[in-house]
Image 1 (cartoon, rainbow, N blue to C red):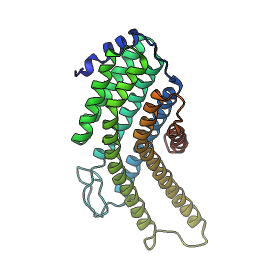
Image 2 (image 1 turned 180 degrees about the vertical axis):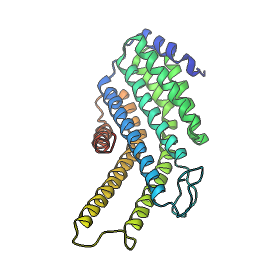
Image 3 (image 1 turned 90 degrees about the vertical axis):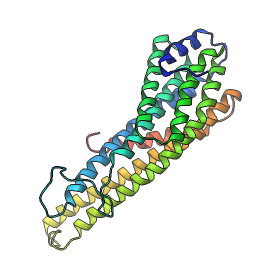
Image 4 (image 1 turned 120 degrees about the vertical axis):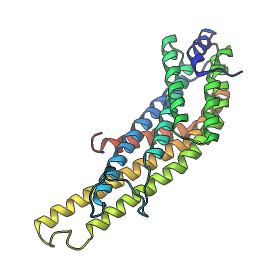
Length: 290
């Protein structure tokens, strides 16, 4: 039975009111929720920084001609027009969806007030609609639709543990497809960042650009270059951390699902995910305007 996203709040509320006789280790799901939120914030900050770097690179590498109505368009390594907004919107929407999904799982696992469940459900439904609108491929889109249905099916569960089992089992294929899509997009973003770095170095190393050796002007110039290269490094590390967190999410999800059947089973991927989230948080705090 398919349940539309508009039915999610009442469905989840009925699930909670149906009784929570099945004990669940809600702490693991709370930890997942917090880490997913950190990954989302760090990823969004990284994407904002990448937009700024792309804009600056477009200005620096603009040819010696009049500025047109399009301003300074982004180009790839071949000098062709490059649409940065499309891949960024897909990754950003994916992180937001994973964040909201983790929030919803934590609510299901830990119980809570009906209005809290309603709020988490509405957020998830909205994030999934945004994900579908971002231009994701059909396989991942179908998987996302199943996540919505799976949450609706929780209303049929008599116990909290059974409700989580149903939701997580049906969500797993969609999470796998989403991670595969993000891996491809992130590879393109990292390649574009490399192109930005190379264009910057090409400009720096042009004849007559750097001040004379042993001058204070040269020292200050090279300091600025070093800081810019360090900024590229931080951004590259942040993109890599975001990519790893998303790619590892499906296996982490499997371990959490297995822990519902075997409560004592270790969930080592959760510790890795939390560590990656903290690393990403440290990186985005060093970024400008973060």
